[in-house]
Amino acid sequence: ERTYELDNDGPMITGFPLDADVSCAEDIEANLDALTFTTSCGLEATASASEAVLVSGDADCSGATYEVTYTVTDDCQRNAMHVQTFTIVNEGPMINCDPTPIEVFDVAEIDGILASVDVTSSCGLAVETTINGPEISGEECEGQIYIYTIVAEDACGRIDECERIFLLPPVGNCPVEQDCEYVTFYSHTINNDRRIFGVDFDGGNAELELIYEPEFANHIGFDELAEELYVINSNASFFEVRSTSGDLLRTVAFDAGLGSITAVAYDNATDNLYVGSTVNNAIYAVDPFTGAYSVVASGIPISGGDLEIVNGEIYVTTRAGNRLLLVTGTNSFTEVSTIQSQVNGMALVESGNFVTAHFNETAFRIYNTSGSLVETIPVLLDGAPFTLKNGDLASGCVPSFPVIQDPCEVVEIFEVNQGLKSNGGTVDANRSDPSVVLGPPSADNSPGSFFVISLEEEALPSVSTAHFTTCRVMT
Image 1 (cartoon, rainbow, N blue to C red):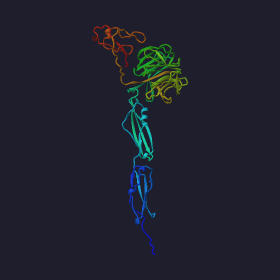
Image 2 (cartoon, rainbow, N blue to C red):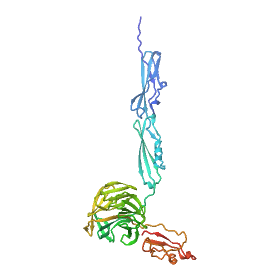
Image 3 (cartoon, rainbow, N blue to C red):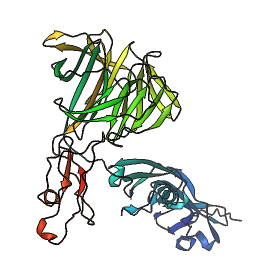
Image 4 (cartoon, rainbow, N blue to C red):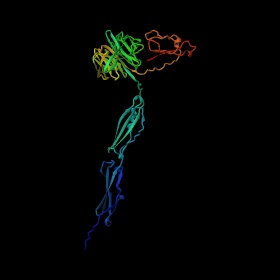
């Protein structure tokens, strides 16, 4: 009897699928058809493949590797193995982003567009989307540009960014840009010592220069466009309108009932004179040509002090509690801050801050609109310290170019009449003489700055009366 011991090899893999790149793990497929093998002695064998196993990197992130293991087993239970490697290659998140600027009507429309931003990712990876902005450029009155940055980050930490640009329509009217020079006036009153000064803020001091000496206790306002100084009689009987050199232009009587006036400001935005009555604790808007008035706010503690208008808001300084107030309604106000005692005047300076004057002080005080003291500025007259008493401040930014008035148009012929001044007297120019009215236009219509727009005589040869109209001229 002879015994044979078989000595042969197990199965041998002779062909196998190659390593491959795939976009996602779900794309990995074992390819048993590409696997070839041999066995000893014609033994039978079976081939199988494992599930893909992540061996490096993060799932479905580019650069991650997966392995599939192929196994061939013969009837003798001997194995041959091969490992196929799959590498993930894919892109990060992608924002569907159109760089073309979008015209919208308002910000609410922008919100709707941004809410519908489309973001895609490889392999269905989770994406976190953040919208940053807006970065705003331009003025509302010109139409603003809103820029938003959209950032999308997937689970692999890859980022895509997109800028969306929105064009908003203009809102409101832009302020007219003009070069101007700030001028300030101080009215000084103590007993019979009444003087109105120009104030020159130069070299860290406030130099006073005498303009003229009023005959009555007064408070002042300034029309910066017409360059007219309003000198208000403190007893609220009348006011004078004077040039910045002190020349009288006109006198206007107040309607009765204002009581004593201690606070004054002129507002070019409304072309009204604003006065504060100590007796009535009220602020009034006054027609600068007729003296008629209407109540703006009541229940305001007007006690000495002054008022100023900033961007349509009325600020009041008052000795009642030594406060800076902001008028918030027709009968309401808020306290902005406390200030130095015995205030008698307030105006704006070029910085946008308030300048205030106080009884028995030798310096003006500068407060910001929050009521914080910024600095004090010594007051000098002829180079010597000057003690402030009762008085007032007014200021404005005078344009460095002429203010052009819209022309008046002749629309019909009507009977010529002389016309009246604001005080009821007839105007000095002879307007009742057609030969004068039909002559060249004339600006010489003293006292007062009015002029006559006339027709040429030959244009109306058979008409004995002519049309003329008057316009206020700012010079």
